[in-house]
Each structure stands twice: as structure tokens, then as C-alpha cells.
Image 1 (cartoon, helix red, strand yellow):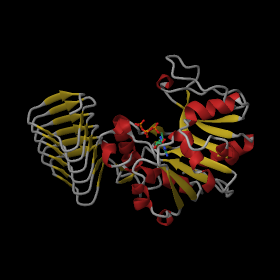
Image 2 (cartoon, rainbow, N blue to C red; image 1 turned 180 degrees about the vertical axis):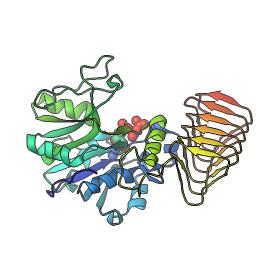
Image 3 (cartoon, rainbow, N blue to C red; image 1 turned 30 degrees about the vertical axis):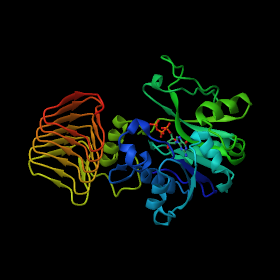
Image 4 (cartoon, helix red, strand yellow; image 1 turned 90 degrees about the vertical axis):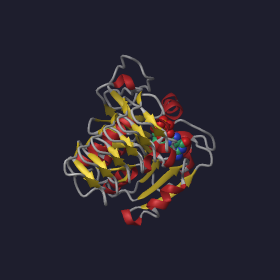
Length: 362
Ligand code: GTP
């Protein structure tokens, strides 16, 4: 459980306006932060952790499919939050989105969260570090096993950020930008208004260049960017099994989470933190591991589904094998098909029985 923010007021802003292109076709029908994970929208996990840290006022910076957020979360009272929504007519990118909520901010400090990060970092400790150092901006920096996949962010002995480095094969540090920051409110006001601004590529390097105090809060607790199909299924399975932190669930479900009306045949196997959505069906002899079945998905007898996402009302035919696959809503995979290795099937596409496809879009 995160420690409290110490009682002193702080606003939270969650950026949820991205198009989520890497998670297509799932994000054609729902924005990434609204995709179901362990039975609730992904964003519910993040909001629960913000609330557990003692923060109540949360502004959502929305753009893509903006209306669905308010429809689900309303004024936030049900979640112990005061939620506000700010819509960008044209997407303003991360920095532009932060600037766009400036007039809703009330406190001296504001915590900004990317809406697609699953993280166990101690929100209260991040804020305390920011206040102790008197920084203009403090970034959560995550230690990762393979920093060459990210831009890296070195710090000096006092914890000050010294550079923002592009991806390189041999980065000088294992610290990467974790997509969570504390800003002094005036710094938000200094971001140019009304145009696209990337906080990572423009705002942060610009602040360093201008001599601002940019600080790092280095951490190595649970952290996952769920922006790709691979990390989305992993994050969901970790939530179901209790490996990823959330306050939005009653507790770990174990090997599988079955939502209302889900049915799994007695001799089927459902393991590895799989979620079986409402009214979804896993029939006799099928094996489903580490996967997410959205509502109404059907896995026919003897099929094998591993590390895959099955969209709403999609169907996997008898004896088919799916590994690391995304099926769009309403897609159907014929009996005996084999789909592997990052293959994606677009919504409502019908693959004939026996089709074999590897990592190509259908
Ligand atoms: P990809 O298209 O798959 O890269 O996903 P994305 O569009 O979500 O972009 P990315 O993962 O880089 O975005 C990081 C965070 O910023 C996510 O929480 C996005 O929702 C959010 N975000 C990105 N662009 C915008 C924008 O223009 N406006 C707002 N409000 N949020 C944004």
C-alpha cells in the first residue's frame, strides 16, 4: 500500500488521450485506459492507487474517445474521488495535454500520470522527495533490466537529473522515465498553450537547458507500461495473480478470474492469471493460459490460447492454436487454425478453418 501524501493538498492529472495505436485493433472500440483488466477498466487500478495515496482531486486529460471516460467514472464520488474531465479537440500530445488542464489545478504541486502504466511506486514518497528537494519537477525513474529499449535519464549524487538521453545500445544508466511526475504548478503554466508539445522530447530537455531543478525519484518496484499486446496480457495476468499492485480488486483471484456468467468446462484448463469475461465460454478440453477473454468470447473444444487477447464476442474454433495473438471484437478463427507470434485479426474478420498465419495482420 502506498503511503499517504501527508495530508497537504496535491492535484493529480491522468493523461488518457492517446490513440493507443500499438494495441490496435482493441483500441478501435475502446481507448487503452478503458480496456478491461482483471474485470475493470485499466484506469480503475491507477485511480485506486491515487486515492489510496490520499489524493482526491483528479483531472483526466482526454482526447481520443473522450466521452467514454465520464460515462464510466462520472464525478468520481463512487471511487472516493472528485473527477474532472478536460477534452482536447485536437490531440495536444503529453506536454500540451498537461498545459491544457492548467486552469483546473488548485494546489501548488501536481502529480501527472500516464494512463497506461501499472506501477507499485510509492506515490507519497515521490511527492515527499519532490518537496524535500524543492525541485521544479520530479520524475519517477524506474530501474529496468534492459534500458536500451528506452531513453535513459541519469542523475547526479544529489538526485538531480543531468540529461535526457535518446535510446542507445549501451545507455550509461538503467534509469528510465517511468511516466509519472510531480510538477510545481507554475512550471505547468510555463508550457506553451494551444499546440502539440511532447513532455518527454520538448518540456523536460527545455527545463534542463534553462537551468531548472529537475529531480529523479529512483525506484525498482513493480512497473509495466501496458501499451503493447505483450505487456497488456502480462499486466492483466499480474493483476489477477496479485503480482501487480492495485486497490481496485478485493484481492488476488489466483490462476484465473471468472466474471459474471463466464463458463469453463470441467475438463478445460484456465491458468496463468487468465480473465474469462462476462458470459465468455471455454469449452471441453480447451487450454487457456495467461490470456484475457473479453466479454462473450468463445473458445471451442480442444483449442489452445496462450498470452492472447480475445476481443468482445470473438471466437476461437475447435482445435485452433493461438499464441501471442490479438483477436478484434467479433473476429472468428476457424477450426484448426494456427496463429502465432504477434498475429492480429481485425474486428469481425472470419478466418477459414485450417488457415495458418504467422505474425501478419488479417
Ligand atoms: P501508442 O499510439 O500505442 O503509442 O499509444 P498512446 O497514444 O497512448 O501513446 P503513448 O503510450 O506514448 O502515451 C503515453 C500516455 O499519454 C498515455 O496515457 C496516453 O493516453 C497519453 N497521451 C498521448 N498522447 C496524448 C494526447 O495527445 N492527449 C492526451 N490527453 N493524452 C495523450
